[in-house]
Image (spheres, rainbow, N blue to C red):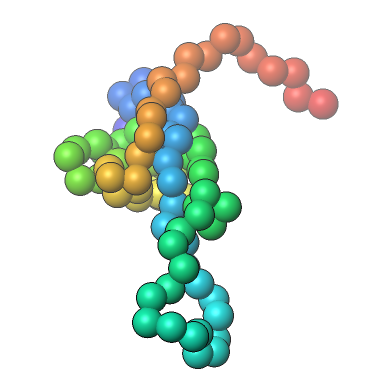
Length: 96
């Protein structure tokens, strides 16, 4: 499949999602319960690319397409997604 056909088959999207967070504390913490998560500990993300797969469990976004190949695949669990926006081309940008 050519790059043009691949781009036409898969829409360009921006996916707004919340990534998981992990504590990097390497020492013992006092108490039985860790502190409650805060909005500050959440990673609010936007990933842009071609939407190549979407089902009830996952969304797959590809950032780079080539003739017969792809690279930079991002797989996002559906439960972490807040919104998906379809992007439309509005014209070419000048290359400096």
